[in-house]
Length: 375
Ligand code: PFF
Image (cartoon, rainbow, N blue to C red; front, side, top):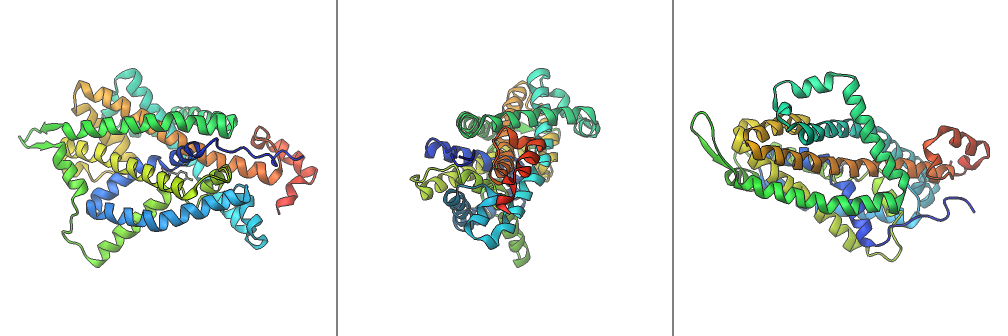
């Protein structure tokens, strides 16, 4: 019997939903969704995103998860099993996670660094001008942090579908949700008066985030919003990257896919929305509308530490919660990316999980001819 014929599966639909949601909830929810919503007309972006999630998002998710469940294969071999002419698609689907993994781990390393700065040093130094650029332009430290992050990801993947991925998701996802809710509620309660005497509140910031803004709306800007929402949806749901095929291949045959997919989408969209409630009111209150122009690394690693620093003592606690929460989100997404690659190697070369990390063993299995069976 070959080693892949007995495939692991999630123990139940809760395990599957949390594992898939933990892949979907990642850096994209936290550093991209709130920025796009603020830039693209607040509530208008939210409405378009939700409509796309319920239509395109749902269709893509169900297609990928059903492909995995039907074939019981990861992306590299799943398409070929559906139809021999589609084998090439499997290679493309598998290349994407290979490309994303190093990038995701590098940023994961930055999050490790900021979590440590907040946990051990109060976080004040992270708010100083030039701290972020100084850190990333070094060579040794960013690399070390990336390796620490990568080892944590590899450890979970090595532990396997149940003891690794499912257990980690079941612990980290509920904790992450509680952290996001706590920071979001706190964000809504803050008030700040700047040097010019202007007072801004978190609730005003919430208005900017959720109230649709049609000022200056043109056909062109509507299409920009539509494309932004579409791009965000693909990245956020982890679709078209082979990951949902992989997780789908671990789903029990009698699990209800429709219900599970609804839950995954609700979880992912809820966390993205709450990330906006957490970030936009805080940035607006302490940095005004100019501060809201930041996105991506600039927002997370430069603007947010300054916002926490302006909050006084409580900013230290909020900073810890914020970066540890992002660490959980980045970790579980990176786990799914690595799992798609490892699982593809296991299926294509008929090797065990342990061996899929070693070229020597791939070579050995090729020598025995096993690796040719998927070509
Ligand atoms: N969905 C994750 C996020 O929103 O950050 C990112 C992601 C995970 C993208 C896995 C792609 C992927 F294959």
